[in-house]
Image (cartoon, rainbow, N blue to C red; front, side, top):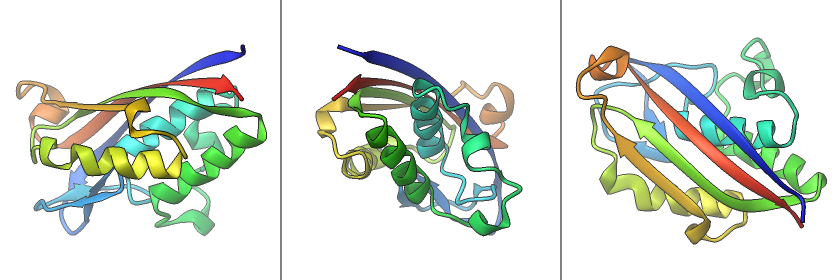
Length: 159
């Protein structure tokens, strides 16, 4: 059995006049994440991990922020396109473990919906996806509520 692992990391600045979208969920908050796309840190970290497991570089190479054609693209579309590449190479999701780092708002009420969205996009069981959320105890840029970050690890298996 061919098994590969990938690790992904993403960070975005919190700014006014942007929606906060994490895991494909529109979360009520006074600020949102700044980016070329909708800046969904969770989906970006998972996408980056899948791209890494496939040996295809990173999310910035696959979806460059210099490409005007993808300005404002939904991260659900980015993850879906990455899923297609994974399937083309003959792999399926084994499991995903991700950690969102944010002081506010609290992520716990939204985790189940995030998990459902990701499972649908990646055509896998929700049991294969684990999403955690943590604060940084008011330390660093996350603690000062200047931005949010996410790390993800993905295991893919040759189908």
